[in-house]
Structures are given as C-alpha cells and as structure tokens.
Length: 410
Image 1 (tube, rainbow, N blue to C red):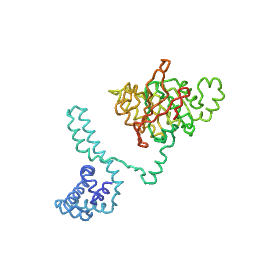
Image 2 (image 1 turned 135 degrees about the vertical axis):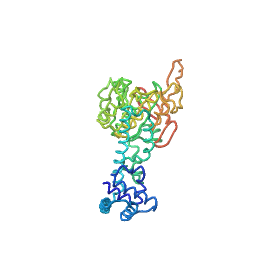
Image 3 (image 1 turned 60 degrees about the horizontal axis):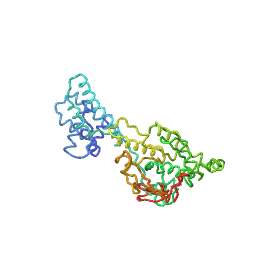
Image 4 (image 1 turned 120 degrees about the horizontal axis):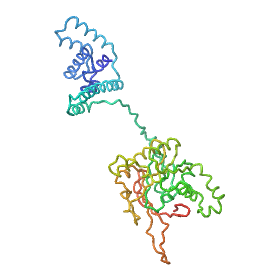
C-alpha cells in the first residue's frame, strides 16, 4: 500500500490534492519515506507530473554516499514502485483518511499518557495538535447528493400537499401538508385548539376521510374528552344528540374510525413519540400539547428546552414520513388580539418557531354583552398564518367554530 501511494503521488493533480499534512512522512517506513521526500522536492521544483524513472534518477543523484547494498535495495524498491498501478482518487482518499487518523490518534494518545502520568500539565500541546491538523483531517465521507433534476423537483413539489385542509378559505392559500412537515398550531386557552385538529382530521373531507392514518397523542385533556370531540366532528352531532341516537353516530363515525388512534400520553417525552411513529407508521401525528413532551433537564432556559423539543419533532416527521402537528399555547400577550405573530408562542423565543414549516395561530373575538347583559362569545375564529414555507402566503382568514360539534367551517 505504501508503494502504491508513492506511485500515485507522482501524479501532479493527485499530489496537489493530498500534499503536506494530508499525507505526512510518518505514514511511510524509513526507506519509502526518503523516496517520498524526493517526490516532494521534485514537485516543488518542476511543478509537473513525474515518472518513477525520473524520481529514481533524482534520488540516486542526490544520495551519492549510498553504499552498493543500499543502492541495490533502493533500485529494488523503485522496480516495485514501477509495477504498481496508481490509486484512484476515491480509494486514495479513504486510505489516506484512515492512515492520517491513525497518525493523529497516536499523537493524541501519547499526549494522553503524558497527562495521566503527570508529565504534561498544559493544554497547549493538545491545542497545537488541533491547530496543526484541524484543516487536514480528511473525513471518510461519501455523499450521495440529492436528485435535483427538474422533472424530479416538479414531481416532488406537485406532491407537497398530500393531505388537504377541509376549511375552504384555508385551502385556497395553503392546499395541505405532506410527510416531513412540522406544523405548529398555537392559541390562547379556551380558543379551540383541540377542536381544530379534531375538525381537520375527523370532520367532513378531513385527513382521515382522505385515507390518512392519524395518531393523536394528548397529554392535557383526557383521551375520552378528546375522543368525544372527534366523534362529534365526524358525525356533526353534539353529545346530547349522540346519546339520543348512538347508532346513527356510530354509522357516521365508522368510515374513519380505523384511521384514527388516540392515546393519553401524559408524562411521555419525544423519544416515546418517536417510538410510536416508528412502530405504527402514521401519516399524520398530533401532539396535544407539544411543549409538554419536552425534557427540561440539562437546559439553562425553558426556551432552549422547547427549541430542542421542536427540533426533535421535526426530525421525527422527516425520518418517519409523517406530518407532525405540534399544538401549543400562546402567551398572555395574545389575549384579546386577533392579529397574532410568532413571538406570542408561550415559553419560546425564536427557536421553536424556526423549526416550523407552517405556523397557524388561532384567535377569537373579545366576548361582548348581549341584549340581556350576559357575556357572549362569538363563534368567529381568526386563523393567522404567520409562517409558511409551503406556499409562501401569509395573512389572516376568518372562519367559524361550532363548539358543540367541534367543527371549523367557512
């Protein structure tokens, strides 16, 4: 292998790519090292590809003190070098990467023994190793680049909206979502976050009716309460009507029942969510609430933990080919407002918002007093699209929430 490398180094292009610290003399035995040094001098002086015969002539001429035995030994080495076939660039890179890593590893290991034995008390030698070798540490890496042919790009982007939203005003500006997307949905308490995903999945023309396998992981409300919203959204009947006519509700729910799974995930973390996705391969996952899956241990601030949680959620969506809906609370800053923005996400600065492909923030009108002097809430909801990598549209659309059936309509 040493002789093959030496033969390859006689090629100017190969030498320029692997010269210096990328191919240190220490990779070679004592005799081969001297031949490699002759190649270094020849490349510096002539700046062209050289032949084994030329290096042999230069080596013999520049070492007149060689004994007859030494000269015969080097002539034998050169004879072997001439018979070697130069390495391909890809193979050479892998070989040099491994050999160079071994050289650096030996230096670090030897320095480690010095620290263990108390013979070295300064970090300066270790810093010098990092500075000297950092730029030349050749990784063993072979990247398979993504296909960006125009036909591939058009085909993949045509499939971007596999699961369409069932709110017409929303569908006109964002057709839908697909695998790998992280969709963050935020609202103040008692605005209709759970009803939003129930309507979106189980409602008329929802994801479940489109054939999507949907998993809902809830850690705030009990799964039976979330499940009831799905039942009312699917049937269009309120809970009292369902009690009066359960067979009708069952018939209306049956077509999508097999596509919806709900689990109380209280106390679970994002690693558990990943295990669920890996095991059941859903098309759509709802985390209600997303922030409550975060691990806070090991983070100096809450926003750092929430950012890491959102990064994990996005990674799950990409690796396990699902659309991930991450439900979240909005801060008190959003109270009473219908125009919302990213900074209103509870407990987060920029990190959580930065991960989203789509961010939808839901607002409602301020309650007003009716003619009887009683406070009355408007069914109107304002859906603010504040981040949108899917279609680029940003703005606000208006729809209505029927809280009795958990359906959003427009």
